[in-house]
Image (cartoon, rainbow over all chains, first blue to last red; front, side, top):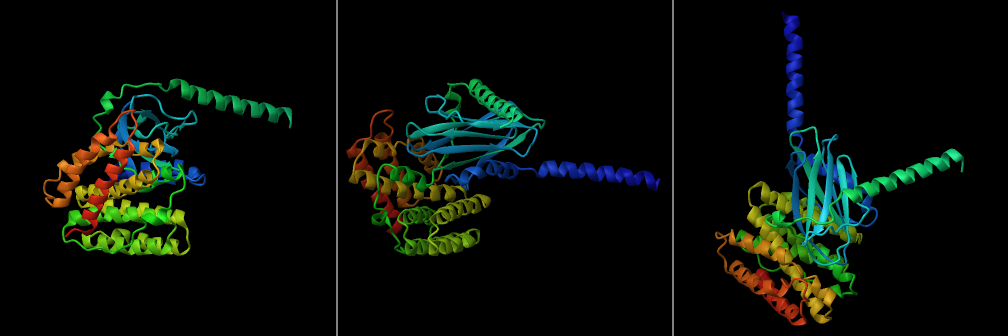
Length: 147
Length: 265
């Protein structure tokens, strides 16, 4: 009986651990991936803000972040999630709803980036989306840099 | 280059191009933003975002705007939060001027104010890093540490559910940044410089936040509230230009508010 209880206990503990690991994953983890995407740009002179914006979304859901951008500056927005099999996207629109980003933005699985050189100073909408994900809810974090 | 290498290079370029094309083709060129306009939060820019844009329009004598006076300490936490935001913005100005003694003074002032508001622990290491980087004239590091300081202060406030104080830190920084922006543009007016004031959503955001702070019943906050009502039509001009007169008027208003934040008992 003892030998049967032991594997059961192991399975129970393993399941508990898996549950905890998935529960522990947070927006902070997503942020570290967003910062990872930003890293190469720091060498190009971009100042990456310490602050970040995040939350969780279901696959197919979108969220907008409204942001003041200044003409004369150049911006990159980086989106990341810790869910490695997820696909994310980020796009930037001006206050009229017109796509305002440069064509060199990119999407690579659980990372995405958008590049903006504002034509006018004003409010812009950063639209983040979880395109695909094996998770019910997927944490996301958005960071940005400017120069 | 071998034939294989040539083929590989071509395939890589073709694939990359195809990826970019696919990316570009799938993105809607226009969206209906009405559903998103209800988004209440607006990301508040750091003062140096607008200073950076201003720098690109022509050289600015930042030394003229450096300020290091110690100023009074206030017992009221809302007033300290406003002042803290203003002083951090002064730090960014001192960095623009590359004024190491001023940066160090400001670093100490930030620490004193953070202590008064109970969030000193969150910024001790940043204050030290600011002093060290200023001594070595590593301005990029100072900028980063100022950003970290503001972020840590606000996070510490948010953690103890003092989000409103955190918003006042942002407001203090924005007011000081706007005061200096309008001073620079008023001195040498240009349409491009004045356009940097086109921040209507940010202003609306601050107005909404202030309305949600009836408990902070101090004269300066009431004054800021009234002043934002005055400023809004001057910057909420759509695609029209912001006039030299408006720039001057906004400068008068923000200078008066800044004086109130820094000095009034």
